[in-house]
Amino acid sequence: MSDPFLSIRQVRKAFGPTVVVQEFNLDVKQGEFVSFLGPSGCGKTTMLRIVAGFEEPSAGTVNIGGKDVTALKPNQRNIGMVFQAYALFPNMTVAGNIGFGLKVAGKPATEIRSRVGEMLDLIKLQDFGNRYPYQLSGGQQQRVALARAMAPRPQVLLLDEPLSALDAKVRVSLREEIRAIQKELGITTVFVTHDQEEALSMSDRIVVMYNGCAEQVGTPFEIYNRPATRFVAGFVGTLNVIEGTITDPTAGTVSIAGGAVSVGNRVAGRKAGEAVSLALRPEAIALGRREGRDGLVKGTIREVSFLGSVIRVRVAVGEALLSLDTFNNPASPPPVAGETAEISFSSSDMLILDR
Amino acid sequence: MKQNRFWSFLFLAIGVLYFLLPLIGTFEFSLKMRRGVYSLDAYEAVIFDPRFQATFGYSVMMALATIVVGVLLVVPTAYWVRLKLPSWRPVLEFVTLLPLVIPPIVIVFGYIRLYNTSSWLPLTGTAMGTNILLMFGYVVLSLPYMYRAIDTGLRAIDVGTLTEAAQSLGAGWITIMWRVILPNVFVAVLSGAFLTFAIVIGEFVLAALLNRPAFGPYLQLIGANRAYEPAALAVIAFAITWGCMALIQVVSRFAPRPPAQPH
Ligand SMILES: Nc1ncnc2c1ncn2[C@@H]1O[C@H](COP(=O)(O)OP(=O)(O)O)[C@@H](O)[C@H]1O
Ligand SMILES: [Mg+2]
Image 1 (cartoon, rainbow over the protein chains, first blue to last red):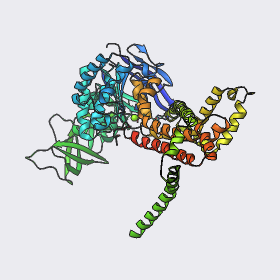
Image 2: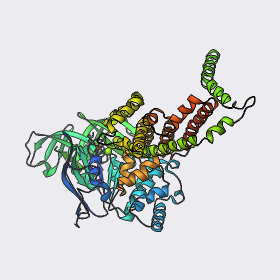
Image 3: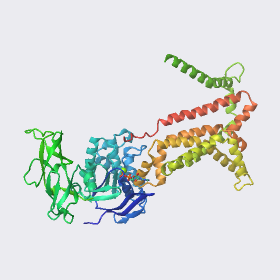
Image 4: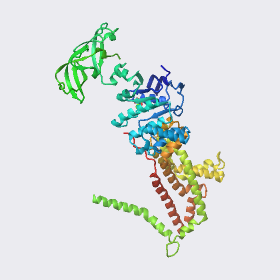
């Protein structure tokens, strides 16, 4: 692995007696897009503001480009920042906003003009240079804010829930646009969001945060399919949790309501009779028997929601209510609530939640 | 409903008469210097009086100095308190209200005691020193208006986030004040400035007791010794004040508009 470009070491932050970030470690490669994902209040913004220099960590260091910046002020760090509330300067035109950082840096007017033009092209607002922020929609303002942050060629781009204030359609198109621009410029980026779909669709890697700790760092694929903790499993995506009891730890058998499953060596070392929580994603469960699936349990269909291309079915298995998704098939009618049904899954798709 | 409207009109009319009648009377009287016909003689006499020119010029200079010092004092203070010490805002509000509660005569006697010729800072010893003292007195008198105007201006923008946006783009405090904060509260600053101007031009107590040749004491002097000229002066003073108010209205049209906020 090449040297990390942005490196956060053992950062801790407390406001008085409240610890908001603890034991935070992260290495971000040059050009990488990393998201901080977590529920509101878990410390994402605080961690981002520590990287930006707006908050001083209670302990730990932040390195950017091999240089310790922990003691530097925000205006000495060469970072670009995009805020949820856009924060464009109301007294300046779009061009004035985009050129602000370059002007502050004392760049000549001709250079500023050409860079502003480039940035306007990049955000596809070529004809908007002379407008004022109040003449723009929210999505346009946020694109200008992005261009403003990137114009001085910052080392790191930081975005704090930049899409949260926008309506759903704009949010989706703008997230694709941000990702495309980020890739084109190859800028190292940290993106804060509480929206798992945003994080999963945009990021190279995701840091799932909970209570001020980084619970798991991994690619969207890893985070979704191999959640390291119960919190990550529950927070990212929909999850069915099934409580079971270990019957034979060496053989890996677990008894659950409606049957037994084998989880291989994943409960090795634990005791027989111990309780264990198993989890399955809705898309890993199928209605009826399927070739090659070793998990099979019986249950009762409780609820059928027809969502168009997908039908979400809830099946009661013992105490648990499991959600599963099947594709709509025009040739066969959907299942009916009240029927008994068999459901199948691969035990290798099953997650074991230990903590 | 009809009834209601009748009474509102009646009270409005009484209010307007109460306010306008003395003004109209004064104006009419100021035109009567020449016997039998209306004329502008009183205005001519006043405007070509060298003492008018001297005192008015002095007060205009004092007003401008007061505005500059007041803006330099209040904008950074109000900004800093909003940004870093929000819990101090009530304290600041209270302090800036004090000049409305404490009579100027108390302020000026305090000044004279503190800065007399045998004190540690003998400002009243020289004309220039007294001018400076008077100017600071005016800054104090205009503080309630200046502070409120500017604080209202600051409330209209998201001071914290704009500051952080500017910092992340490399700006230091001076750049932030000069390029980001001041332009966005400029209209508020101007309205504070016009109010200050109106206050300083007509102020009497401080100038008289510090014995400076200002417009207020001149008004009083003429008022005590002449008939028609004081009426003309009163109308001129009113016109200046109203002119200031009208200018506030005009400049507020050119305020940078805050964009629609999210949510
Ligand atoms: N300046 C501050 N003083 C005290 N507590 C703060 C301050 N800033 C944030 N907090 C607290 O820190 C916690 C994390 O906040 P934040 O980082 O904004 O969370 P997130 O962005 O994940 O929603 C919250 O409980 C918040 O109340
Ligand atoms: Mg936040």
